[in-house]
Amino acid sequence: MCVCNLVEAALSFPLMASSSFAQRWLFSKIGCQIYAFIIFSLGLTGIFHLVIVAVDRYLVICKDTKVKKGSAIKGSIACWLSGILWATLPFLGWNGYIFERAHLSCCINWYSKDPQDLSYIVTIMVFCLFVPMAVMSFTYGRIYITIKNSHQPSASTGKNSSGKFSRRKRKRQTKMLKMIIAMTVAFLLSWSPYAIVSLWAAFDDLRHIPPTSDVIPALLAKASVIWNPIIYVAMNQQFREGFLQFIGRDIGRRQHVAAATRSSRPRPTILNSNGQSTTISC
Image (cartoon, rainbow, N blue to C red; front, side, top):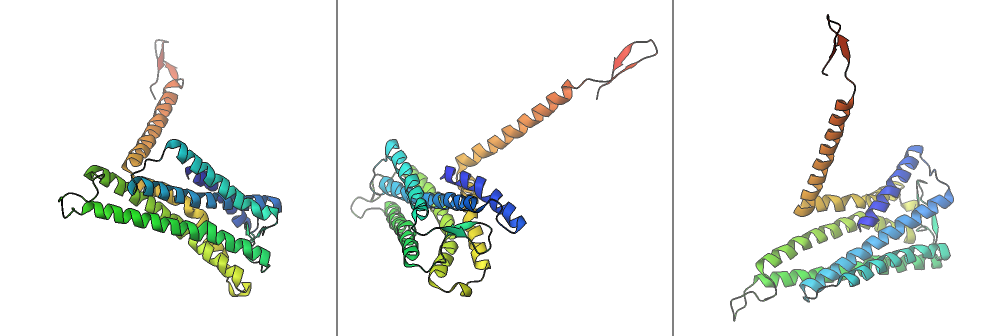
């Protein structure tokens, strides 16, 4: 997900910002289609990664099953391949990439009323949005119930009903779960307006949709990359300490370079009354 956010931020904001200032897309039609493909595939990959993380937490907390590193890598590769596959299909004739109405970027052809194009829209909404949301709702619901039950003592033993949870482990898992849920909610809130407007455009007359309804949800969706770093810094003490340490080290290094630069400059000299040179301290 970090790679998704990094690539999306590096591509999305500079290209769309420069086109917004020019009030038109500046990088040719084929460039716009490639841009739309990359952003769409990264968005889908991000959703699939959230599903994988939810399933991972479900297995660890509810089933007490440790996910191996190799399985996690395979799951991440599957997310990338799935995102790229779904985003490639419009190039193969199932729907397509066209300019948005504001002509600032490209998107899936949400406006077409052709049955083939509509079938693609319905399919990606079902398998790339509704199904992932259902999986995440189920897994996080089961995790919540498991953690809640672990706090309640058993009637027969007087101990926690789930012996696999020590207090320290339960606290760590709960903290991590809160951070993951915050990331998931932020991602879905960023992309949901875009998905709603896209369905609106697909099944209603385009004249009923104001142009601002195209631009603002698209900007919110592309701004989804800013939330994860904020959530990491706000909710993860280890990450926050590392981030502050990195900033402090970077500032210290710059100050050291500046001091070394000043000390390496030649100092001016003057001649005194005896004809001897004297160095002036700056």
